[in-house]
Amino acid sequence: MKRASTYLLAFIAGAAGAIVLLSYFLDLPYLSDISQWLKQTAVLLSAAALLIGLLNLVGVHLGKIGGQEKGWAYSALLVVMLAVTFTLGMLFGLDNRAVVSLFRYVQLPVEATLIALLAVSLTAAGYRLIARRPNLFNIAFMVSAVVFILGSAPWLILPGLAEPFGILRTWLAEVWAVGGARGLLLGVALGSITAGLRVLLATDRPYGD
Amino acid sequence: MTVLGGLGLFLVLIFVFLMIALALVERRWPARFRSIPAFDALGGATERAVEAGERVHFSLGTGTLLGSETGPALAGLSMLTRVAEAATMSDRPPVVTAADGALVILAQDTIRSAYRRVRAADRYHASSGRLVGATPLSYAAGVPAVLNDEDASVHLMLGRFGVEGALVADAGQRKQTFTLGGTQDIQSQALLYATVENPLIGEDVFAGGAYLNAGSMHRGSLRTQDLVRVLIVAGVLIGTLLKTFGVIP
Figure 1 (cartoon, chains in turn orange, red):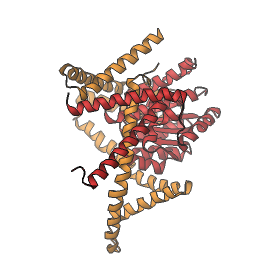
Figure 2 (figure 1 turned 135 degrees about the vertical axis):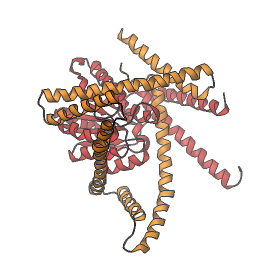
Figure 3 (figure 1 turned 90 degrees about the vertical axis):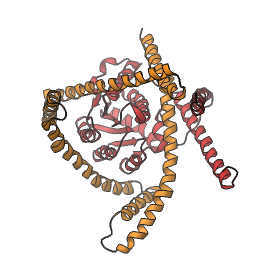
Figure 4 (figure 1 turned 90 degrees about the horizontal axis):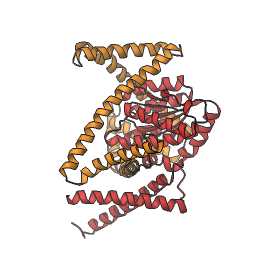
């Protein structure tokens, strides 16, 4: 019985994927319609999955609150704020002033702070990289990063250096970086194709056995 | 069918043929792949975590299963299968986090399947797969708490990451976990290269299954990628030479 359900799931996943893939190559009206319907269904299921994910999030944090685990107060705050935002959004819509204010005065500043933290994190990471693995590639990586910063930043002192660093930055970006990025993109594209085809062929079954 | 459509279909069929053929070849004559330090170190790190009763944290990133982010998400799930199987011996199953509900459900299914295969389905818990935040930065804000609360000593990142990937990686570094990370976005790869102890570059992101012995099809896929890449590079070089010498306009 279990084996039958595995085959059935594999068949449904493979057939749905094959129909969508073929619709890009074959100009058949029915195929295109079915493909469109499958894609719309996927978007709807994805939205439903987000709700299930939110329930999972609430479940995990309620468990922490119930067990008085480490950081349970943060979990309580999360659950309360989630409930408030969700209720306001459902009752008054996303354009409501309170909902917009929650995003503008809570979500946005917190996210902006995290982005600002990124600059500090990356500086520390650059130091750690050289300290941990002081090889030629990592030194070249860090030197390139410094040249990029010097070539992009305004030179308030010694403004005459802005032009040579700008030229060096452009040369690095348009020759070395673009060349390397194309090579990496080629590898990523080929990897994406084989990962997708393995699911279509049911050798990879992320939907479980 | 247009000419481009026909060509596309032909290329997909060539890919499928090569993958199957090279997977069959792989069973008889296994290839030796180059060493990728991140994968070489992963097995030992997972074993140490299992023996020490610590947890493996697997981040599937901030992408979704729809659109161009599907590739790294599927690669992450493939690798999760192997990592989950390796960690089933532990009292504490791996914890998987994502910023997409569908990915969380698939991660739960993957872990559940790993437990079923070792006949320990009763040890699976639904909280092994978690939605941490629905936006990239809220996800990045939530991961440090998971690492700390779950006492994770292995921090694996495989999926779609933007700039927030650096923050997610930094959380692992601060906790001194074994950190491995890879993504499909080129700019984010540069960030992860600096912030992750064991970075995966380019197609390494998709090589996890082959390097962790997920089956001959994974190894066949990797050989297909290598073969097609050589053909494309040869085509580009020949085209460049022909254009340089004026053979083609």
